[in-house]
Length: 210
Image (cartoon, rainbow, N blue to C red; front, side):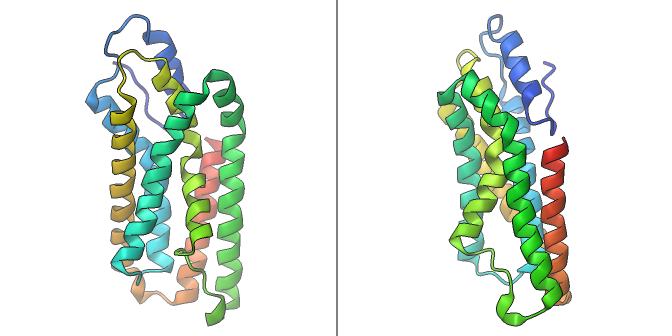
């Protein structure tokens, strides 16, 4: 089955569902769902890698909390798309990359400024609720179109699908943080903050341009 998984804001996935849903009883295998889940989790993974660079000494509970938020929002966006229908999802998908870009630009820019100032009291904190929520929305909003794609497919168990998406995003977030937090303690705090800010801005640009 020629399902394309990439970073084209998932419109290829929606087109696939529209073209196949009337002819195939079970148009999506578990392998397809797993690949889709991994594709959706890539932005969560990248942001978590950045978090591991500029804030490597978080407690386990804090890491689990922001990974949970990433997984939860990544699962909820397809569910919202599944309920909303084509007209709403089409309009939202057009502005979604801009919303994600502006959120990541703001947070990344704030980190850059605070890293350059190099004042301990201004250190960026990813554990703040409003920051976690903003990053969760930014990394998941493009997945709205996936939910509409699910709605057009026959015999798709939406609960099973969003559970897979959420769990994979949760695990990839933990993996991303764990990979970078191990070595980033060797980097000066302000340099790590600058690097993390540049990474977030880069992720925003990637979402906007692809």
